[in-house]
Image (tube, rainbow, N blue to C red; front, top):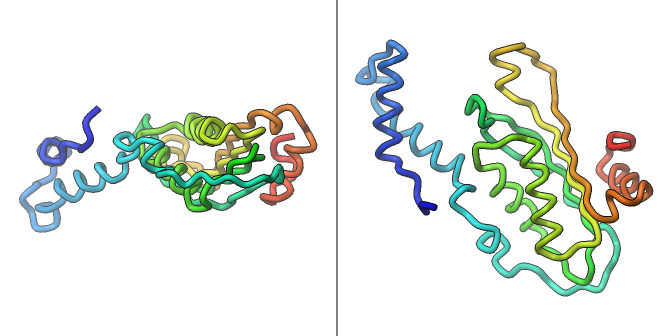
Length: 194
């Protein structure tokens, strides 16, 4: 896997797209658009060229606790792989450790890494929960993402107030209704995963 996006090639292709759309890529407002789009796409898909070890960077710490740890309202921005249009929203991550915990910012960075890809919300939710579970061998993990999809809002059915909710529960979060309910109550979503 390449460590860098080919922004030169993307720039050329964006220029061709502008022409195919009937635009003049040499007009003042569009002259720099191909480079801006190439740079934006390189950033928005940078998660495909990053790995989990880089993100965690050793920030897993020994801590003897079996209490639930939650980081909620993590902003996520991604590109739908079907139309390459943005979807965005909030991610809530909870886990029950088995003697190891994440540095607090690492859960947000983990969510960013997986969201900065051409993505499906369902896959994104699963990838985050699996990464948390496997990185610290947690007793259980719960992840919920609430997002709005521009592919539904700007085109197609054009539903402005629709929101997609996905969840992934592993370990004790899957096995215990009480654990799920505690997670939902703490993120302010009681009854959503019932």
